Amino acid sequence: DGGITQSPKYLFRKEGQNVTLSCEQNLNHDAMYWYRQDPGQGLRLIYYSQIVNDFQKGDIAEGYSVSREKKESFPLTVTSAQKNPTAFYLCASSIISSNQPQHFGDGTRLSIL
Amino acid sequence: KQEVTQIPAALSVPEGENLVLNCSFTDSAIYNLQWFRQDPGKGLTSLLLIQSSQREQTSGRLNASLDKSSGRSTLYIAASQPGDSATYLCAGGVGNQFYFGTGTSLTVIP
Image 1: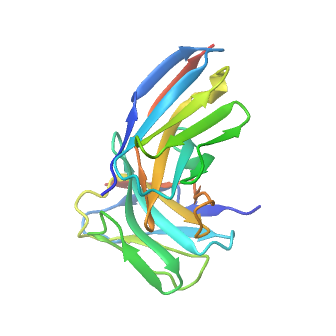
Image 2: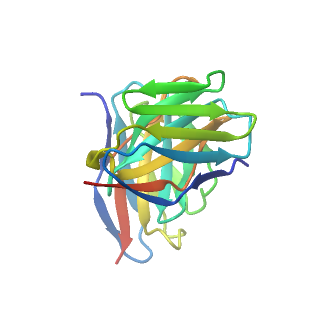
């Protein structure tokens, strides 16, 4: 089945530690996105990429980094510079077209130890 | 920057009732408007997408409308069922980004 796989489902970070969240899609979509979801705040865009080896900052990119070395993969690193990383992280992908919806993974919940 | 608002934040209805969820946006330059469903602890599932040139889309018991001039979209759910209980989010596409509302949490009481 085609879809988006996020791993792990739950992740714990120690103070001062970088952690990487995985996102893989087999939908052959060009665009991929990372969102952060906090209670009562909806989804906020962290980074997005429309083509391999290129990505753009979203509204809340500080403390995060990404790479797009392959079309199907868009990992997100939460660095120690992100002071409030506890949240639900969602990865999405889409065909770049106004009539195509975004498809989402099942998310990774990150907590601080 | 696009601001998307959803009212009400929570809604509880008896089974079988028809209901309307509201979404308003500030930037009429959206190229599409999507409605999603989110179950607890899960990702988002796309329900309906309306392109900016369209007025509405229908899928089964769901109907979504878009009025760009007033900055509003509605999601109509007919004959609600307990399985419809979830959070419903709308998102407007502007430029290369999508801007999400905070969602409406729907509970359908058997």
